[in-house]
Image (tube, rainbow over all chains, first blue to last red; front, side):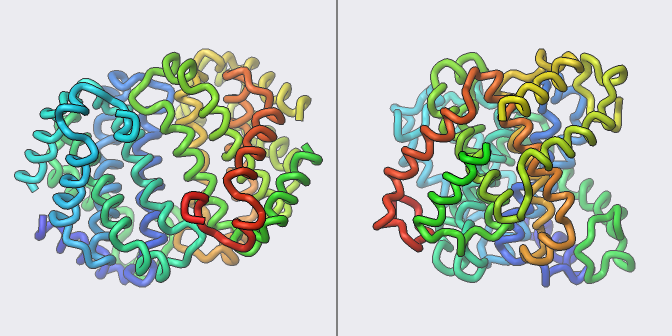
Length: 109
Length: 109
Length: 109
Length: 109
């Protein structure tokens, strides 16, 4: 993950794009790429989309991830640290015995 | 990244949630978490948000990433492979000499 | 529609909120409300969501519309004019004989 | 607003699109159009975007509205009723004396 992050940062810096990458516009960018990912499922059931648009879905998911990595760098976050920290919070919000097999939000469990 | 992915999958499976995680609803979930991330920047300039809401931003960015990892698992994508493949495409769409210091989209460069 | 718009504007002005309502943050707000609307369909098929969450869906759809009306006011757009103008463009992108019964995007029709 | 709604519905029915317009995919569509609207503000301050992309912003805002109208029809909502009902709820969440000049969410007012 670290080497991948370094390569993403180098891609950005070779193009001198850091100047535009303030966290607010990066949060917007993550939303926009998430929408492009979601667009491949519009008007289709998931089986049809997952089969017909597999490569497009991979590409758009990758773009979401690339902007997430870029934002982590810009905010000074360590990726593994923030993910593990959030997983601990999620484990407290969704304890196994209460959340097992349920799709409800934590506040209605 | 592989250990992290395994831990995210174990979190899901301990709660028997895989049954809900079809790719279309995961794409929706990535969009929703991206919106929660963006919400921390609503009505603020990025400096104010990045300072006052640093921990919330880390948490929501982590949630976007967790769903991205989950979707990659569900679709059978290798994370590093799809990111490196997309970076190569992005490099062709944004060649350094054309894209240097510019924020334009590739089709108006 | 005009009276409704006036009432939305009065709601805003009674709270002295116009100062925050620059078009970029309003575009963010429309996205966030659209995500709250979409959240009611997460993990459900549409029949289940449309039945169980009918009132929530109405409320969130209304919030999207309220911000759209606010943005139109802020940008100086007449609502009916921009909708009719876009419908004409959409009619050219999706001519009836080509688009009939098809869910494809205009560039693949 | 009623004539406009009728014209939007006629546009849809002339193309036999109602079959695709279940509320879940319409909620996705509203999100996607909201993202296209937001994209015009990416990497720009609002003054620059509002000036350079005025017509594009009008078009995308119109598309959000068109899908909102379509969804109201599909769900059997009266547009004015749901907007006025939500404004009353918003007025209770944001009473003038508490919310005046503040950008905080209701739960932190």
